Length: 138
Image (cartoon, rainbow, N blue to C red; front, side, top):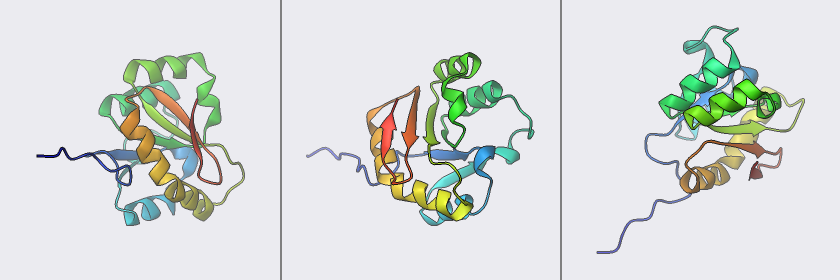
């Protein structure tokens, strides 16, 4: 019997996308739900001023996939340590000054590439997502 290979067009089973506070809530939540994804929102689980390292560790330990636009987390030692320790998988939007609908559109456009990375790399990793939807693991 031939083996079933997971499609890169779908997220790995049970994948939950965590929408970081830096992205806001709407319209990204609605757009990702419309695309058939399971999502969790920062403010439903953490205080607004929760330290990044605590949030990243918790989200990574839960196996959730982080969507953010906080590019600085790739450079701060405490956040890097939290990412590594929790095997976090993070996708950082690198385009600045986008509105909510534009941010949502970028992530939806990037979903096939995001799925490909999720299927091929276990984590920890940080991947950059460009405005065109290109995804590059750094």
